[in-house]
Length: 258
Image (cartoon, rainbow, N blue to C red):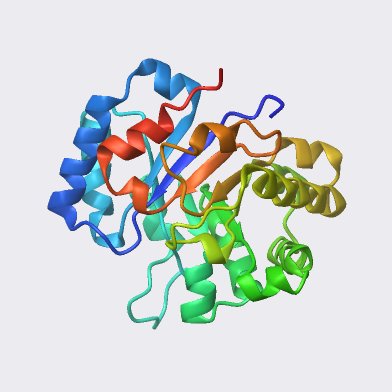
């Protein structure tokens, strides 16, 4: 894993109102200690309606959990009903923004060019994109999974400088493993995360590829996190369902390699 500090991120999707979110973060903070924060970076990505509440809890109690968002719009402002700009997120001290999640791609038809524009907007406001890539089961069965991921990275990173690419997080999420209970084997996950790093090497060079953190996402649980994290090219996890409960998410963040 070189010297890349692991990043464990909880994507809450459309769960937890702001009362539940406050309770969740407070409970999570009670279960984590200084050694856990030293061991890995930890972020939570609640719905937009929770962000201000969570910001207040984290800052007032000096909790070293990073505040993240799940989505953003690429424009600064305008007639985009229901959308939220990166400038608005920056004012809430959001540090990380998920972009290109498969659910945004599949359900809301986000394109690689839109995702590229969002990543640039995130950087403009001094936040870090977590760029998601991954393939469907049909694409995997057809033997084109690596080609799909390479296209997503080539187009998603277009025009982004090497230093910025190196500071990003790339989350490999096999779409067939999200919310299904199915998980890629650690070996499968490692193969694809190594492919992600190789693509970064081709796009931005070897030094950048060694800097970038690559997460795995897809039914990550306390029982499989350590084995996943033992792989050379997996630097963290983007956690869905298991991040909705403080105890299970804390146990994931508290993984240790023997």
